Image (cartoon, rainbow, N blue to C red):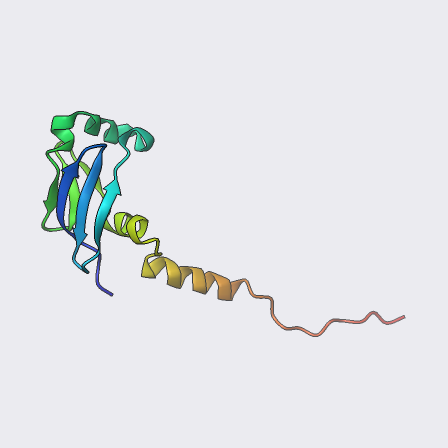
Length: 109
């Protein structure tokens, strides 16, 4: 399975990014720093937000001060798909919780 990697990111107004992934998926990703809170509040400063770069080693978008976003989460949000790992884990859990087909026991009088 190939990992999702951001290959380009361009800052847009409204705390959004125009993003392209290594699999060709592209579109607009809403960063929503107020909703995310914490370190993401640094991105409310336009100069900081516009300083977005793509980390070539990890394929994630990042900003000065150690703020970054997971490319898998971004890809999932943009495509509405579950990552492969989550699909297999969900299938495995589904298999584990299936009740065994056991014959019912009848009480003897």
